Image (tube, rainbow, N blue to C red; front, top):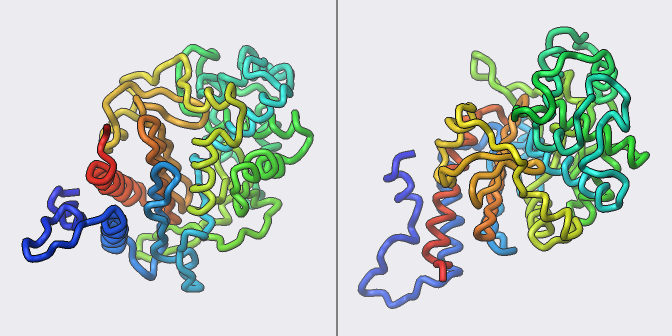
Length: 387
């Protein structure tokens, strides 16, 4: 976005009138940031179309928590901070936390071989940590099921495990390179069930969401649906410009690599819990943002994508436990049918930004995220300068 647009959205940069003695207090500036976010999102999100929810938090304080547009176009129901939206791949950090909770309970080790749990050739040489860090080389399920599956039936995790038992060819030997893998995180969800003896969604609720005060968050399986409070439905636009719901997509029974529904209020509580060590032991918490031993190759397309964002400090990209890392920035994106998400968790300063959309526009998501970060960064430079 052009710089002059951002300047229009930054009233807190304006000079004080010489005839006015009013001091621009931190409270005033916080309100100005909120108004700037309002202006930005209102210019991009139509009031009668799919919407967005945004969180800007700093050091345990919610600076902005707002919703725009509709969570249900058909019912004219608006997006609010309490609206539960589909997270797509942002879900992966919560799947990783489930595994780390099991490690905390000494029910598994990250060095365990996956063949210890399923003696399938496809898992030979793969450790749990390989799965977490996308270095397992395990075959991609999406391309196979998109082509071969009867779409009148909902695909579930167990169906993909059955397919893996047929020993599909790996992409590369375990630990030899990095390649993003949805299959890996689906297997992690299956592993949570196998080790804990309870359904994955139940374990996540009891062991991660409840400790983090995420009282209305849930993993969702279309084959065994549950009621989702204030649910945002997912939308895609056809060639005539009409929005259509995509929530009955046949792969929406798969969990672990995606399928989390959460809201801005719960995510704010989660971020505080993560920063305040409320979910894991010190040992396991130290692993959440610790990069894998393998950097993402410089010729990977992710570098071109992330270069669009102001927050990237141009350091090498790595992957941790459900988070990308670049210097002091941890982040993750999410893309699924009718959903786009993006979260940024800074490690050098306690800034968090979360952006959830119930539509399929990656360009809109990226523009909003980039401009929101710039607005938040400018606000912090003005109100909380580094010592």
